Image (cartoon, rainbow, N blue to C red):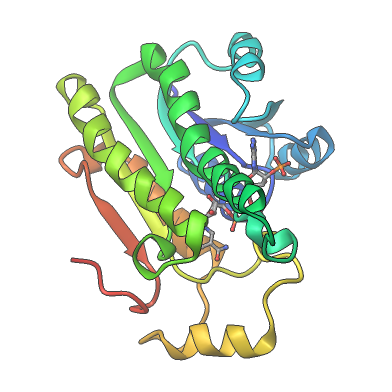
Length: 241
Ligand SMILES: NC(=O)c1ccc[n+]([C@@H]2O[C@H](COP(=O)([O-])OP(=O)(O)OC[C@H]3O[C@@H](n4cnc5c(N)ncnc54)[C@H](OP(=O)(O)O)[C@@H]3O)[C@@H](O)[C@H]2O)c1
């Protein structure tokens, strides 16, 4: 039976590379995101094994409406949708602004993964795989973004035990700096980029394929005894314990 995957945020960056890797491994892949045009273009590029289902992963109504278009049996869920809304504007100047910024990060990165996983849990195949994108920022800071990614780790630890009896694994993949994505927009200065690269042992930025290959391994049938873990893909910029 052909295995199926749902990759949230699969129209760009790490998610798109992950969809390509899973399709190359023979899976039928659904990519999701808010921008239908971006998803449709990605699906057309990635080939007949990949189809697009647009929805906002932070919106319960949109998730429920999308369920009819998602696979009845889900072998692999990649909670990749997310980002750092703080990068799109100046720091908040009011207490209300600080509150809004922190809630926006929690919603984009943590609540989105919790909602999509909760909606799809009844559809997980025995031996299924849940992989959620964390970040080096969970260990190094970055205000609400880092806190949201740290929250992903805590949530994943419990999820692993909730689903483990069915042979389903739940892991976090935590990248450092990864280029070829929309993550930073215009916010990454050449100085900041050089600093982040200088912190690696490999002397380079991460590539989307570095992360996608790690996700594809964790998604494979052979990775069935790895669960509740955080797998760091950061060139040594942060040494995971
Ligand atoms: N790039 C890095 O250096 C880096 C480092 C550590 C962790 N990460 C994490 O890696 C993941 C992928 O990011 P990326 O670097 O590949 O950046 P990206 O190109 O901006 O990809 C993020 C994707 O998520 C989708 N998305 C965002 N919010 C969504 C929502 N509410 N509902 C549905 N889809 C949503 C976006 O599409 P729409 O806008 O069309 O919805 C986009 O396709 C994120 O979780 C990010 O936090 C990235």
